[in-house]
Structures are given as C-alpha cells and as structure tokens.
Amino acid sequence: MLRPRPKDFDRQDDRPADSDELANVWRKVKNIFINARDCKKGNRDENAWCYDVVWPLLLLAIALYGDKRWWLQSVQTQSIESAYLSTVPAPNGKDKAIDRKTDFVLAYSHRHHELSALYERLRAANHDVISHTTDPFTKRTALFSGLEVKPDYGNLTEAELQMSIWMAASLRKKQELATAAGVPYKSLPDLVEPAVAVVGHQHYIYYAFQQDDFVDGQRGVHVLGPESDRFDALKTDSIRGIFRLLRLYGNLLRYGMDEEENGYWGRFFKPVLENMAKSERAGAALSS
Image (cartoon, rainbow, N blue to C red):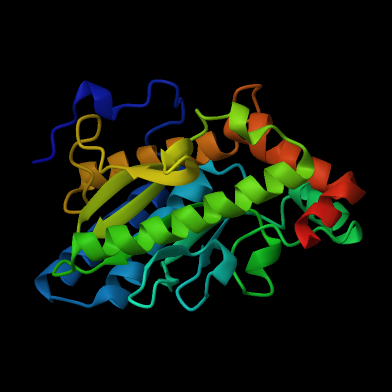
C-alpha cells in the first residue's frame, strides 16, 4: 500500500482531491508507471524508454509547471555545429572533434507570445542563429538543458559522454552570443545549467558551467555530477518516484525561466537575446 509522507504533499495546492484536473494527472502518472514497468520487464530498447516513459513524463511536467513557455524537442537526429564540438588530440597532432547526439532538449517556445515576439525581432535583425545545432529550425530556437536516455541495460558512462558534449557545445554557443551581445559573461560564473542522463528507471542530475583558467589558462566547460546527496529515489519504478521527478523537472523549468534579477532568464539569457535583437554590432561579431 502506498502511504503518503508529509513531504509528498503540496501545501500550496488548494484544488479539491476529486477535481478532474488532478484525476487526469493521476491517470497520466499511472500510465507512465505502467509503461516504465513494462519497459523494464520486457527489456525494451532505448526508443521505448524515450517515448513511452521519458517523453510523456517531461510533457506532463511542462503542462504542470511550464507556464506555456516550454516546448520539448527531440534532437536525436540533429548534429552539433562543428565549431562548438569538444575535441581530443589525434595521432597526427591535430585536434579531433567528438561528435555525439543527445535525445531531448527543452526549448523556449515559439508559441508563447512574448518569446514569439523576441524570435521575430531576432529574425528581423538577422541575428536569429542562436543555438549550437545545424538544424534549420532548432538553430533559431533558444535551448536549455539536455537529456540523454538509455535503456535499463544501457551504459551510464556513454549517456554522460553524449550529454556532456551537448551541454559543452550549448554553453560555448551561449558564451559566443553573450560576447557578441555585450553581456559580461565572465561576471556570471554562478550561472549553472542543469542536464540529465537517464538509464532505465533512474534519472541522474548534472550541472554544467563555464570556468576560466580551467585548462591551460583557457575557458572550459565543466560538468559536475551526478548529484546524489540532494536527490533520492529519482526513479520511475514507483508512483511516488514519478511525482518526485515531476517536482524536480518543475523546479528545473522554473529555474530556466526565472525572470528575477539573479535568475537564469532575467539575468543572463533574456538580456543576451534582447541585445542581439537590436544590435548591429552583435551580427558583425558573430560573422567575424
């Protein structure tokens, strides 16, 4: 029997327990749980875990906490622009780019009225290439975080590699945008972008950030994790675990759209894009 604990309750939610909205949430959570159970029992592949478990989980989190600002995108078939790829030394003495793909990314929705207007201004200013992919649509979309999914028999290290390459490229592009837009990126070392690796039921949380003088006096991207001390039972093998994941992803969404003075959107990403939308100098810097 599932016994509720005090921390399972949202004291700010005053909706009646028998409301249709809550009943719909319960049905979706139950379906995610059943799908995850069947994926585990049936030894199903990555595609099944992606679209029967993780995709509906993220869509539900966006519906509950996203304030219509988010659009979940699959980027499984999309490539990273080569200029932003991580590299390793090759036998011939040159650096070799490491090209890996990830599964999902959170996008700032073109369908939200304020964001749509911002995208239009970026397009009108001819500064609308704002992400690190080569896809015609995604490269003109502001992106946040990244998620790599593996089946229950998958390898966490491989998931971490794919997710880390994606996040490093994303932050390099944002650094480039900040420089072109005249936003002092070096003064924002505490801006951290979360990322997720999923292996079967378990969701692992990571933090990506830029750091000066990280390697040989150059700026580098550091990915820390997984975070295990603060988060427990982040799994889809129980109803309680799924609700905890929904709350976690809700917090992640709120962080990404925080418009406060010290928020990720209000302090950094929005000023960068707003400056890009009205700056001729930004376009010149990006094209040079």
